[in-house]
Length: 422
Image 1: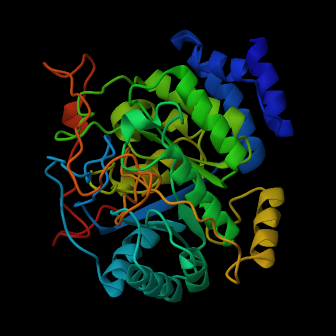
Image 2: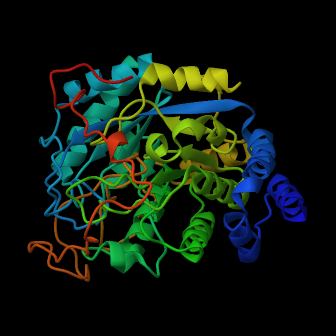
C-alpha cells in the first residue's frame, strides 16, 4: 500500500503527514489492519526500539469534582459508584507508589480530582514527590492536578516533578459538547505553563466519545503542534452513572488504527496506551505494543485494569522488554531539547501562562485521563457551583458490542484496605 510506505518514510524523517493521509489511515479496512500495524511499528521501533515504559497511577483524591466532563466518573453530578476520599497523606501516597515501582514502573503519576490545586495542595503534593524520589532512585514523577496558578508549576518542578499531564481529550470544535465548565484553550494554556516551568509535557486524547475521524485528526494535529513529550491515548471507559455510559463505538481494529495514526503524526513522541485498552482492544492488546511504547501498569483512577503480572507477561510474550530507570525514554534530540528547556527556565522563573480555565478531566482513566480540579474561572461557560445539564444519554439497552462485563470499578489499592494491583 503506497500510503503506508509514504507514512513510514515521513515518520523516519519526523515529517508531518497531511491531514488527508491521517484520515486515510483511519479509513483503512479491517482486512488491512495488520499492514497498518506493521508499517507504524517500523516507525515505533526506529525511535524506541522494543522498549516499553511502565507508568503507575496513584489517585491522590477521588471523586467530588466540580467540573462537568461528560466522560468522567468523578464529575459533578456523577452517579457512578466509585471510591470517594479526600487527599492522601504524603506518606500514604509514597507507600502506594512503591507497589508500582516494585512492579517495574519507571514513572509514577500523581493525580487529583478538582479544578486546580490550592497553594496548600501544591505543598502537599511537593512533599509527596520528594518522598517518592527519596525512596526510589531514578523514578520519574508526573503530576496531574488541573489548572495551575502563577508560580505553582515552578514549585512542583523544584520539588522534583519531572512532568505534568493535562489532556486535550478531543478536538477544539467539539470540546463544548463534552465539557462546559472550562474551555479547550484553558487546557492548551495549562500544558504551556508546564513547559515554561521546565517540566516535560504529557497531553493526549480520549477516543470513543462520539467524535468523527476529522475530530480525531484535529486533536492529534493540535497535539503535534503543542509538542508534548508524551501522548497518552485513552479509549473511553463507559462507566455506569456518567452521561457517556452508553457510548460503545470502538472495535479492537479501530483502536489499532487510531494508535497507528497517532504514531505516524507523532513519530518520535512517547505514545502511551492508556485507559480502556483492556475493554476495547481485549485480546489484541499485544498488537498495540507495536504502536505504543508506553502503558499504565495495573489499575486506573476509578476502574480496574489488567492484572500487573499479566501486563508483564504480555510484554514479554510479544517480544518486547520493560524499560529500566537507567534508560532514557525519549530519542536524543527530544531529551536534549528538554534538558535545554530546563536549563533555560526550569524551576527558576520560567514564565507561566495566565489563562484561566480547567482541570485535567478523568476520562478514559489514565494519568492521561485525569486531574479534574477546583475553584472558579472566568469565561468557563457555566456556573461551577451549579449542577450543569448532563449530556443526553441514549435510551434503551447498551449499544451492540457493549462489553459492560469488562468494566469494573476499582475496589482495591489506595482508598481501601486491600492491596493494589501492580
